[in-house]
Image (cartoon, rainbow, N blue to C red):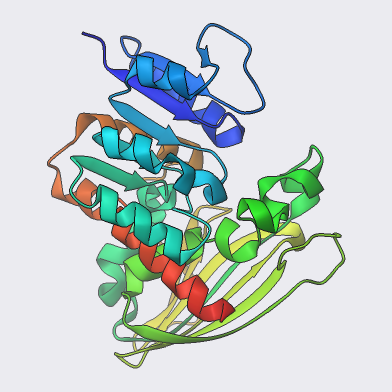
Length: 311
């Protein structure tokens, strides 16, 4: 019997995962449920069709604010993939967590953990910089360039759909937790500049105070005309620069005057989507890949941090 996959939502992420699954797992039976697009034989029209289809796996790629509407469907299905973020608020995230915590496979799509440059940093951080005492992280891009078609009506731009820089750019929050841990308190400021005519925050600054005495900062925005994605880590043995746009890793050791490029096996952000799908369906026991994967409890923790920031 063919493995049945349902993709809920057919925006950019739904289309991406549809193409990847269809190519990598041609024997799977794939159906799509979308409120806006229903063309083609692979589209289901309503919830009755979903119940008749009885999916083995669900990819929830719809707006995060609507995930809680699918709790009954989530209960019936063993394998659940949530496009990030898990939900648009902590309370709904908890409802989801209580259902999926004992599922065979549940993953949140923070795919940057599968980017080799970040994995190299996490595994070799102490060798590179010694004891870390601070870091600066930055992610910014110009939303009209990112969401080129009617950006003001995109999920990113609408509060009711789970938009805003904190949720939409929460990849950085996830990999900060992954690399440095979760024992910290935060102070934050966030603003709506009104420059883009949005109803969500488009500019965020967060300070982290870790229990192990690391201080960190994170800047997120929708306003930068030149895309930027950087992590700079300061330690007792040197400074490490991680550029996710250029895919470069550079080290300035304390006794050196020149930056040294660190060589590693590079992959692309595009390939990480394939990697996370392969992991999800192969249910590998590879401990390295298991550590890379963002579980639902990790996605819930991010929602908790964001709620504390907004409160």
